[in-house]
Image (cartoon, rainbow, N blue to C red; front, side):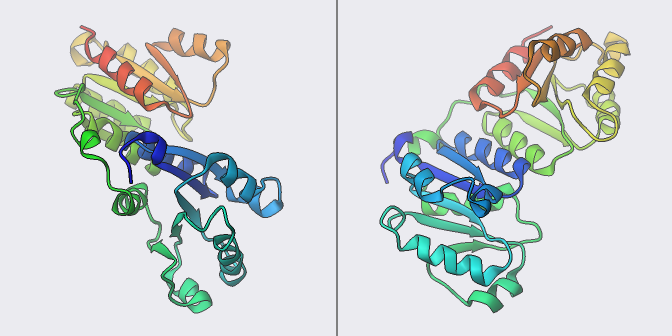
Length: 269
């Protein structure tokens, strides 16, 4: 494999939007170029997988194997024999080891990640084994050294990938799943930056930032903060900034923008 990003193309096929997004960010942080699609679109015929692969030309394909295993396995075997996919490496993900083995048996065609559930780090580790990170990428600068970031997101996949992304740049990360826990920890730990999801099932990001801004400065009320949200229109941005966040980061997250914003926020007095 060459060391250029152009030669490190990965396609991700999964049924979980949060997992797709988390894995995309994690792999792009490692220097890969990604193309993503939902399995439902392939299964219903809304997406032509062969046309997708021809367009993006991935060298590695991460494919979550759904039930029924036997029919989907046969489908994958046929795909593997097509001219455009013969040269690709496959990482097959599944959460049911016994059912898969009973249906298809052992295979040397793909690497299978087992777990209940498997995580982003498991899949990234498998990709690394097949496509090692070039030395020039391993010696990355650490622009966030000495920066402590408090991350709040109800999705474990998003928490995991945000933590990995920021730690790779030198940051110390505390990641929690609820706004209530984040508020308690903010007063205790006094992080340099708060990075919060906006849409959470119980107390949301607006609730959290309103409570933070109500604190006295000595208790963390001035902590610089950015939110993560899928809402991208100007009205939402105005509401976010009016609520007390300094930055409005739209999903899907751009890694370089995320790191840059955290670095800027950490410089605030």
